[in-house]
Amino acid sequence: MLGRGVATKQGTYSIGIAPQPAHTKIGVAVKNSAGYSMYTYSTVVAKYTAPSAPAVSDITDETAVVTGTTEARSRVYVKAGTNVIGIGTANSKGAFSISIPKQAVNTKIGVTAKGKGGYSPYTYKTAVSSSASAPSVNRVFSLANTVTGTTEPKSVVYIKKGSELIGRGVADSKGSFNIAITPQAAKTKISIIIKNPNGKYSPYRIMTVG
Image (tube, rainbow, N blue to C red):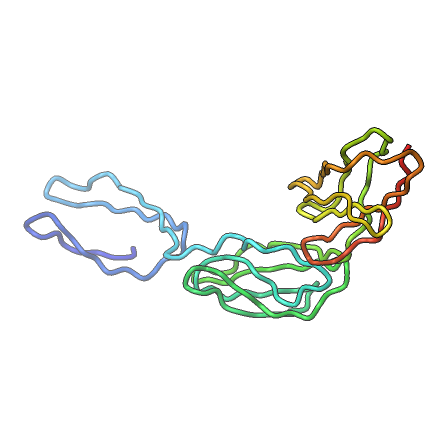
């Protein structure tokens, strides 16, 4: 028995018990002049729950600060393997910004938060290269007035003939681009280069107009 007491004339009662673990099933019964009532059961719920897995921004080999959001005021841990490489505290809105050493490409980084209800699940990010790759460009014909292809999403794409800039545009959220140019003569060489969202320029992709 966890506790026992007597109801007031108004039928209310308040009975002290020892704190119980979450998910414990507790039964309450009443005894009056006619005997015992049926039990009413309740299950103990946790006062606090663990935070959800943090939302974490993408990480590159140049990242020195990990940013994201989680439960407000929770403690945030950043790990590479089993090594803790950064610790910080989320602010009153749940945002965090934690300094880390730069990590090699393909390093798997885990981020967890500890709130009043315990630790959250991990969110994992893999460090990617901050360098830009040359764009993939579709064949360009002599009557073409656009150049199309794919590259990193949101990259700025530049198209040149020699040192002359003949086209400029931005890749969409999926990395596709379609950039207007003045039609070029057959056998003209054009160069396509991109500047990715990290500010890195790619190598040139050289195309010969067909």
